[in-house]
Length: 333
Length: 245
Image (tube, rainbow over all chains, first blue to last red; front, top):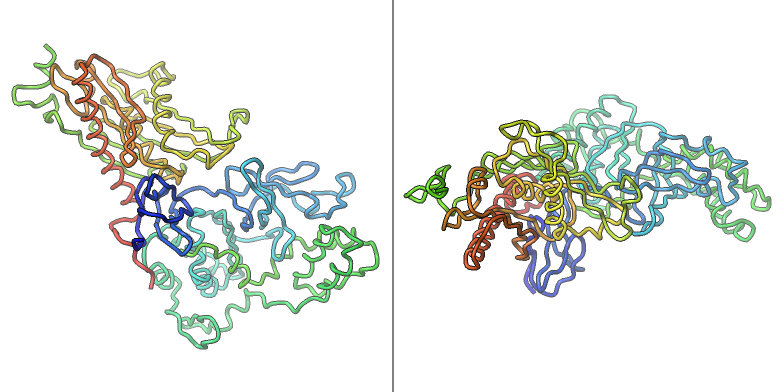
């Protein structure tokens, strides 16, 4: 087998000849593997793939996406996820399995125009994508600066092991929520930091194909190159002028102590359906002290659900960023 | 009579080209910001802008196909694209050219990757000078690649024709009207497949083969320009991938 060097390709270009496995954006034609997109061809252990540099978002199961609620039926919300398919968020996902359209007011939870961060639970060729907000850090996004970038630039914006986005977040004292569908929401208290973060994100989008982008972003943000302080920890960033070691604390949520409610679902597992249990789990992740353990003996699923209603938009405040980034960095460029 | 005016005694054509010469071609990628992909082509005096939208939701919904994407093409000549005003309503010719452009692009696209969606291709002729369907196909293919649609190959297109007893490459408007035959060809250069072959006029068997081979050679030249335009848009002057430090 011949060595495959990373190279730029356009549709129709022969990447390699031989018995390689075609992975992403690659098709076999005779004995050749051919690129189907404009991008960078590379070979890994599994096979040959092309990282595309253009294209719209095509949903994939387990993707984290940011979407806008555009419509509501009696049983679900329709969500625009910046794709050719509209996604559905079932009301049961938010209210629990005993959701009743007659009893529950869907408008209390999500209104048309609301932004949500959600995970795609199912999608195939025959059905539109189905979303869930029943997970840590998912739910309504209450405020923030909305930016749309090309979905193909998302891995570049995240960077290797989240390096690019961490640099931007720490230097501008903001929090950046990235959907795999190319929608980015930036939040922060400092207006200057917010606009600088937006500028940096747009720069990454425009110059994503060029080399040494991280250095140019650091220059834009007035950040020095990383200095390794402790081998056991990740690389830390030192900054010019300001004392920065404490800066991220303002925006990065410290991991919450494990809530005692962890034990609740298993204790209540026989009494309540799985989806109804999932709603209180969501509450655990909120940083608010009032998310107390529920009484597993009572059949108060509805009160649990109501609690989850109140906290739907608060879920985001308790994000453990490292975990989130780990999930997002599926395809490092 | 016609060959006397179309090719002179030195073998030069009305626009001073040789019989195997293409007109000047220039392709710019990404000219329409609102579109998912776009290209502008100058093929001699032809000026054509192509915008691609999609894959996106199909409207009307009943047009959607369950197993693949719908490709829609609209070839349109602007009222100011010809010397006398062109009625902006779709003419019989435009409807036909829209169809042949769609059919020439379809084999290159992997439409089964986008079921229940649609891809719209708008080919707007700003200035016409013969061979606009070929120029439109070449630009549309580049715009589709710019839009990130999965495709097996780019589609290149070029026409050839007969002026008297001479087979010439890339006929212009005058040669189209006064010449003896006109053969537009669209071709997949890497897979070596023909996706469009039309012929207006009469050719003998040997002339047909010569004309087809000449058109394919022209397509290969057009392909190099398409490739260069795409590479320039996405990779600038870089030819090799540089690893980030």
